[in-house]
Length: 561
View 1 (cartoon, rainbow, N blue to C red):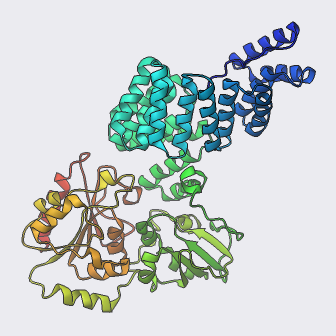
View 2 (cartoon, rainbow, N blue to C red):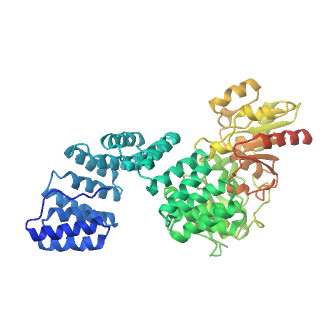
View 3 (tube, rainbow, N blue to C red):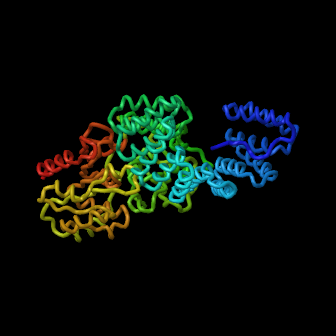
């Protein structure tokens, strides 16, 4: 933000000289010297508006935002029409995460000073924090109208466009800002993030490298760079970049989490899961973090005779995959309380090892310890060689299986259940999902294909209808229903979704189609899974190219049946 001098001047020339010297320290970044100088002035002249204003800014910049707000308000009592002070108060309010109040201050500043581009720009950033990205875009456009060479506004405008899922336009905005100020390190970082989201890994890598050249201590740039290198299958370099990120910032939770995903992908499950626990310190996971009075269990206490709550935390597939640990805990003598998503409740009622099954948001019984579901491998000491892999650990409802068999009628060809797309809200859905028409074009005709999809996208419905493939989306009310339908198949073919985990946990034959960069749980360069012995993995050989795995699926189908 700008920190131009406030209106008004000291009451005597000597104070004016001292105030000017303090301002020079502040402009040079010597904030401690500037702070001391302003405090000395205020000790002599408590109503010195300029020093109240500038000291308030320094406090807000140095993580003492509430004190900064107090001083800026005192400055505005003395100079109520000071646009710059309102701008500073907006900045301090936003540091306190009081973004609505900050926006009001920026609006007041713009009403007092025509074409106040910096206030419009910072208002846009506050609107992004409130996820009001369309309004933020308008604010950045206003800042650029008032100041066409405003590099910051172009870059932050790119962030608003990214929030609106317009990555291509965001790239253009980032590049416009960087053309004005090529030394804007954050601009290169944000450009790299947009290019990464678009799958331009080489471009993203170049942007992160430019960020690091300008700002060598930027841990976020090293961490994001590791993600690009992972997509490029340059794993040794990716590891080094992760390690550099956490060395630069040992408390950088996102960097540790990113490092954990790479370790897990490479098969170092013990170290990977230990670092994966750092997810709870990231902004993404703090929103869903559960806080209980009871201690969290990570393997340090003997659980024999104790009641241990395990609770779900992420997607249905994650719950299905890690539900196996209930039996491991029961074998150690724990009384397991398992809180699960309502969609999984019926399916998990027969899960071995569970004493009490609870739906999310229902009252919990008493318990002694708790553990988030995906932290259980830490306490259980899981390595690649000790993954609990006894399947099936889930069971179908016999009545539902019989009902599906009756509905499907006599079988005249091998039945193959298909899942070709996942949730559109999944961050990597564009990598893992494919069009049904592409899948059907690759499959031999001598089979009965049945959709196992809970939801069919509008773009796939024409292919469903043209193929005559049976689909029962309206009847798959829970995962228990889907499990029973899966049990009627001779084979399940699925992309990386919860149904792939479901079929594997049921011990059913399942062929999983994986993108060039798979999720960590499927590891690398292998056609089997330590988590699901009945699974066979078919991997893309080139990014975005499903032709090789689909050709292999076709050949294997014809050979198997």
